[in-house]
Figure (cartoon, rainbow, N blue to C red):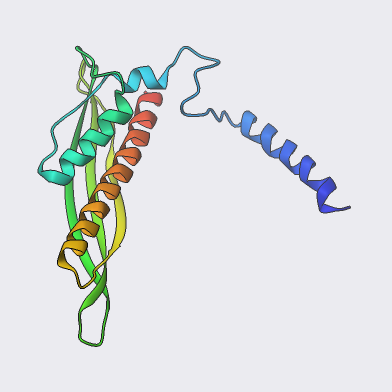
Length: 168
């Protein structure tokens, strides 16, 4: 039997197995009354310290509440960030040529009505940037890495929020 003949059979078996285990797409609205996007718009994101916290919060608000924040949110999200930079890729003169920018976030999603914690945990984002002879270029590369890591972190947080809201 050729691979071409076996592949459709394996795909059919995989699809029927997924439907039998109760798998549901996270952002799906068909089949039940739950609307992930509408519930995510009910989350109030608390202020996050530092510049990277502002970048993360702004990216998170764009994802969660693209039409603006709710006047009476149902959930609170608290995020605490820490950031670090690790230099790597050293030259013979012991000068770094590349650096990793890492953001760690601790989050907690709480329902306002009964202060039940729906989801809590930690996520992290890492980006790398080049360190070059030009100080200006290195600073701009680090700032770009900071923005990219903040966007990545915000997307991970949005996914964790969606999971927490869906599982309540």
